[in-house]
Image 1 (cartoon, helix red, strand yellow):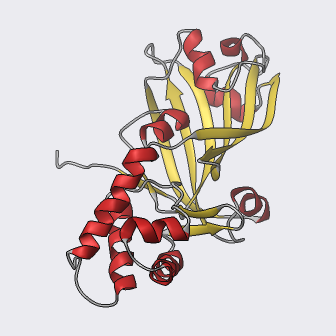
Image 2 (cartoon, rainbow, N blue to C red):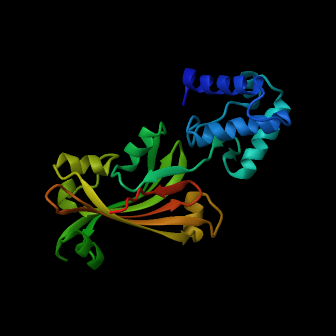
Image 3 (cartoon, rainbow, N blue to C red):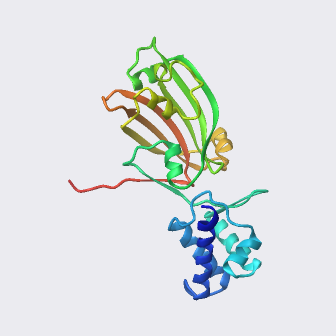
Length: 254
């Protein structure tokens, strides 16, 4: 959220404070409540940086001390995160519906965030037993195996291992920034998927990569994606930060 839209949100917060809403009490508590509601309602997206303390105080017509105390309260709640030398960012949770199939990049752009990746490995290798089974390949066939860290607004969100048949990327690893894009170029874009999500704990490597404390909760996801003709396209294993991601599914009585 940038520019006029960004300023409008904080101008609205200032108007809410001027009206004496929500509730009464110390001004910093009311400001914290307004900011909390803006984050929970999606008016301030995850990863969005707050203005500097001086600018935010002017935008909502309060003192810098009031802003500082409100930010400290929301930081303790985990809704804001202070990055040394970079500023204060919204650190709310990303809600992912389990009924929609979208690439990470498309999903982040839809939320108004900037996706990016840190590529850890790209390789063309012979399929192992697990990969061959997942993609219905023989053990003599090759796969494209990629590891990467997925980020939103430069914040690490997940570690991902994705595997596809090497033929889908012309047996090359220099397919650009989008694995999905390379697959689409071959007319084999996934249209459905089966996904399993379970709770896990960050080991030392995961904690360091995702910048979370050792032993933090994570979500471990395994997904099998299929093209329109029902053939396997991609097998993915990902580890998502538990403090930033919720998976939601709608259920109905049959």
